[in-house]
Amino acid sequence: MDLKTIWSAGGANSALEFERQQAKIVAALCAMDADIVGLMELQNASPTDVSSPISALVAAVNAACGGYAAIETGPIGSDAIAVGAIYKPAKVQPVGETAVLDTQAFVNPNFSAVDKNRPALAQSFAELRTGEVLTVVVNHLKSKGSACTDSADPNDDDTLSGQGNCNGTRTLAAQVEAEWLATQPTGVDSDKVLILGDLNAYRNETPIQALEAAGYHDLIDLFSGADAYGYVFDGEWGYLDHALASEALLPYVVDAADWHINADEIRLFDYNSEYKPADFDSAFYRADAYRSSDHDPVVVAIELVAERLALDELTSFYRDAVRSGELSGKGRFRLWQSLNAYAFYAILVQAERAEARGLEHLICRKLQLSASLSDGHGRPSDLIEGAALATLNEMILSAADQRDCQ
Image (cartoon, rainbow, N blue to C red; front, side, top):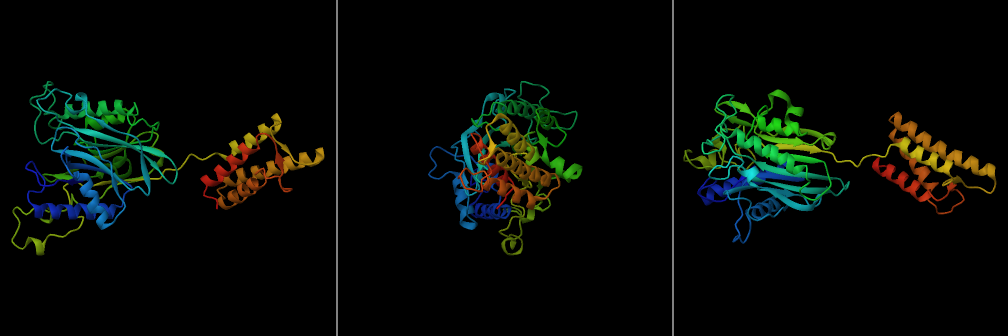
């Protein structure tokens, strides 16, 4: 997504154009309703700003549909534009440090006269529902639009394989970012990582291959296949905007797709007023999501679920605790103790077998029953006792909660 206030280097070049652009961006963000959003081509913040560009965007979004907050970073890098991130505090909360990758090895790896890649922004988020944590990294690498002829690498511009200008600069940046992410730069111990943004590289180009070699998976390729696209240039289709998941995050990804609100739409419908007919406002412009940018946004669905406690582990824990004497059946006589210990074991085994058969309702009934018979309240109905009772009951309650037992 792209949002710039009035500045000479690009974006809206009048107050009216900015109002039109913002209205379209806000419409798109509200329609997507994402819990976390990575943004490209925001106007870079200034130390003298009373209100940062990203906070102004959040205010506009919240006025329309509510519920967002910004990761405030201040100025990032030396370019007129920067990346950013917004999120829904009702769904996720930032944890750890906000990390910026702005080393020369990333922004200018081939020692050009000016920096080429915009600094990357990493933030870890904890989902409030599950407590699970993932790290999101927002990127905007050097475009193919202008050459890197001042690069220290004479082969930086790929003129042979079709990967275009500054491919070397993008590839080195991808390698540096993968190494940086391996250090957990936000200070949060989570290996669930999502790389987002305009990498200005197509599916089979070396920057993407570098990230895949580091263990990341191209989600658009995985879910949309060879026909995926999110950008059109001179009538040719492909995607430059990516979502790549780490190996640990991949099992939690439900879907990923380009939302075709921009690439399919002609420029006549965008916010610019240049080269438009006199009746542009009434005939063509709409304050909707379509042609809010020239790139399609990438939408990723992730279902973070705390790792389930396998019920055979629960049964094994109980069996081992009984053998070690840390748990025993309750009762005045030895026979009662043995019968109660076996009866409790039978309930756990029934829950385990129900899970093997996919009988969720029966699993919950057995877990709830076993929890009530091991809560340590000393009721006559309790079947077991012992030093490991509190641990066992906590495991049972956790297993029930993980399965949404009510």
